[in-house]
Image (cartoon, one colour):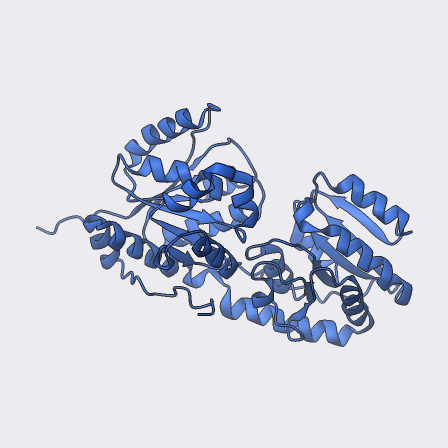
Length: 391
């Protein structure tokens, strides 16, 4: 009689399922694992959020484990919930829940996988005295950028415990031609949470400079956050309001906005592997970015867009003017960017990358049952690992 083989069970622990880059990548990871034959459940500290119905529609159970403010009680609630599912892997979707994933996995003898979804700088600053525990307690870390890998290793994490899995994006079925508006206007967009580390003030200053040379250039800032009032005041002082710059606020359908735009600017100081760059390139938009996180690895200077220095506002303005002045340049850079997303950042290899990470973690922790399941699924601990990072 043939023995029934146990399926791989993976539990993701998320702080929130709100509309954000980390949460979007969570849905891609869940889909990839489901396609590989794994059973997946998601445990969220906060109920609701943009991606909860998305996961539910995929047939993924979402369990709420954050009914109490005490971290100790939350860990206990998560432990109780996980006993019913009996996962082989407990994986964090956000850095600040690494501790929950690591502690709750131990009583059920599951392998714990932590996360860093940025370059790690702000994560370590925000978590203070807990930062070292959040880095070191999970058996391995999944990070989305080489910058995060370097940060983790400089903080004492062994290199073989850090697995780089870059963000991915399912491309839209169609793409916009980004034609000029009827009045000849060209739209530059900057998108993200309006927080200090995103440095939208650089975009506002560069837009004011660029419009002196190309008045048809207009700007849009898509996003909400505590910096909005200060940015609006800066824009007013520079004479950009109302014709030169529009504040969109929270934008549920960013791809639609990108399709109405002609270029994207990213002006952050800290990033991991920015989703917004992938989304813009997928829509055929040329991008101008600072070298925050892995931005300069994603954007090939003068091939798919431009990379400018962090405080090079003049250089940013120059690149925006060049793009505004030439539809052919925008087309050439935009097509190259879209081709790069198709070739290197589709979700097709994500399942193999995750299984390879679990294989490495299982070998570290000598988790023989998990290794047996992964070997049956064809996982290789060396598959697709760290290939994008320089030595």
